[in-house]
Image (cartoon, rainbow, N blue to C red; front, side):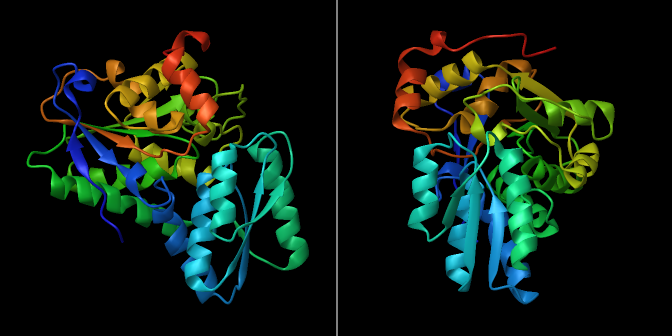
Length: 307
């Protein structure tokens, strides 16, 4: 596994607090998803599969294609209409076979599952495969080994919940005093709603610039894990996400909205004993959206992100 950097947040981002950035965006794929995709794909291969079908808005699909290429497998990736061009290009560059289908990720996922069953291939449900959680737990191991002090809090963007699931469970074992905070897009709050209810609930989703957080249908296994892994869930709205993208850009760090979510949530995390670690999950964002977020964050809608 490739170890990613942990670095102090630039002064302009930290606002006088002890804040650190875990730079998952620096991997060659530009996102953290490889950590879960590689062990999951290895498990599929060990079970006899030569091809795997999955669904993704981009980063998971690229990671699946990347892992498949290293293991001599095929990755067939269903993506919804309107997926970020930068992410689709990344899937293609790593040999993924792209199928565009449906208005959102959950519609694409349903079609991918049908295609997998019809073709006698396994379906890789992002967030439902146990090897992913162990892969993401390595992020917690790394940051604990890299920090000189125990963290006061670790703030993790939440899409399907597997990232916080893996990180949170490991933190609970090794650093139980660290506050484990998940961040959802206010436009797609289903995972926070499930965590608050303590069970899977029906949710909805409005359009969000954080496509990696745009979950409408919760994965039951992830909900079960988050009940033990997370201690707090916060919501951030579109303008907060865009403002965080711009703040990171000012520090010379290009990220997508999901990658900026932990910084966007920082004002909702109180001062604690010990540093606050923000997980920077990815950098794969289309140029036009990036420029708009940097140049005109006020053009994005705001709403009550703390309801």
